[in-house]
Picture 1 (cartoon, rainbow, N blue to C red):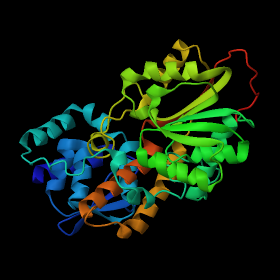
Picture 2 (cartoon, rainbow, N blue to C red; picture 1 turned 180 degrees about the horizontal axis):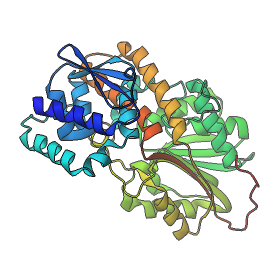
Picture 3 (cartoon, rainbow, N blue to C red; picture 1 turned 180 degrees about the vertical axis):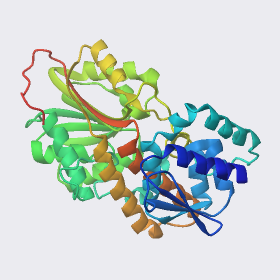
Length: 395
């Protein structure tokens, strides 16, 4: 383990060029990186096996070490440390440096750690409403908001996002709107209240459908909008506007052609659609092993080129593309703050201390990825009529 500790510090010293990292090991502060000055963030290493786990398994090893208490944050925020690693592209630089890569391989080959069991793996949306209520706002919107100002509250971020989506779609009184993967119906409710649409939301979550329809009834909108328990393969009818937020990234790639074909068939001749999805802004779509194992098993990051290709094949004209990934920083930071404030209210028999650290680590990853990774949050606006009028400025 002493070898792994030495290799880990050497990596930070060689490849972290814009920051100083503090490591408290055996009660002593060690500074790493060549940023100069005092550490931006300081980690306390509680068990020496931390170094082996990180070098052997990358972010998965780091996440599991955090879950097991092998490492804690002494000063600053964990997402500060993750941001430094992402910003300095450590994974790429290690692979490009033969001497360092061989050292890491030797640690990996010598590693005899027993892999922890996947105790916390279950379908993400099968987790209790109480967990999501601990960090989401009252609308229960679980997707990237939109910051008009860095000081926006979480409620304002989500309202801004809903309003922006409605304006991009140019919703009008009496139009028919379809929301694919509608969650609790927050977008439909906003669109009905402020734009006078009628519409349908579809979801494959029974709880989303039941609670969403209760919210619709409480808002007095049951005669205009409703949620239905079914999935995208059942799309039918005709709609003036179609929107899908945070749903496409959960489809297997083989399903993309049918997804866009059904949207194309359901749009009226003058119809417009918008797909909002977490994406990969890179040549390859590499899945993070921690997220895949513990948070969203089987999920993917949509490439913009894939969306464009399928829209072109369906003869749907792309009208606007926007990457709002930086807005995810503000959204996820609010989620993290709320989770820390409210986690004590969760039932410890259902969510033990290790689960709590797992969820916190996930939210830290979201914050860091929003500012220093190749992740994206794409909003792609398209229309069925290539000759339809277009405004001179985007929303």
